[in-house]
Length: 429
Image 1: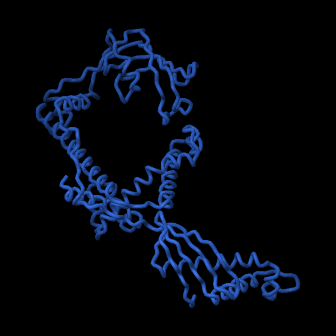
Image 2: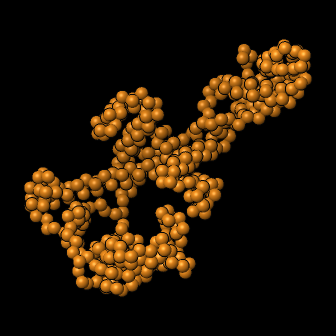
Image 3: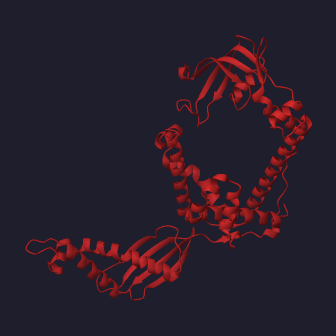
């Protein structure tokens, strides 16, 4: 369009911009002519060859309302693009447009509301203080012994014993589950073996089983989690009765030099060297946890000290992406999203409302870190570094370098790593 648009903008709440646009009358008339020419070329009117009916007759046949709608659909997208370019506005979703005035021979008036990336008011890092954690990650002798037990467990000898059940035993049990006074047969078991420890049995059963003798029955009250595999029990209160039919003891092999060599393929030749190596692994893991906690604390401090008004459209987009990811995960498990929501006793709108605060919090973190991280990034070099540490990435490196989405993903990872390193440096954490 040759004629100049008139655009007046105003800042609105929730990172939105309002635009009042006036389109010159000649642009309106030209659009009407172009639309009529297109409609006339396709019109089939009795007495005229296709495309040869007079434009006035075509216009009379289709009516002013339909013609106006065609003009709106033709003109508005181009006008909005021009207005956005003119004002250097980068929208994050489709603008909401209202046509206020539109008729031949007169300027058209439009009103548009556009969501944009929000401005971030970063907190002053010089004033941010990060408190050290109020708990210790020191590797104790007890932690070391527990880890050594776990490493020897696959080699344990299982031996039947005639005594009460103890923590860590393999219990042979009959299980009966009762919900609302009715036994759930699909959950009942006979002579099933289960290790008496958390992560294997429900915590309520781990609490009542130790001390139980052969043929003795114990009962535990349980509330099944909402995510329980059996949807008929998800979120339900139940009574679980367990009868002990046998007890087996796990005997771990002694940690000697021969076992140390076996467990490490000869890398460690003595039990003491093996113990030290395991302790060092635990300490390395503890250091990683400490670093992660410090990073989280610094990020939280920066986000709390910063101000950003996350637009609703950005949150909606995040929730839609989250919902699509959940649906893909459920489909892989053979479940349907609507059925899953029924299990939770939530409508999709309620689920969205439940997830909204967390989604908004995630976006605020991302926006604050992105603002802090505005700097040049050598993404390809970072991708190559990551590929050296991951054989699967290495085989895909050539394709990943060409992929826009892959470059964007690794740019995000690189930015976050640099931001965290810089924040830790500034905060002295």
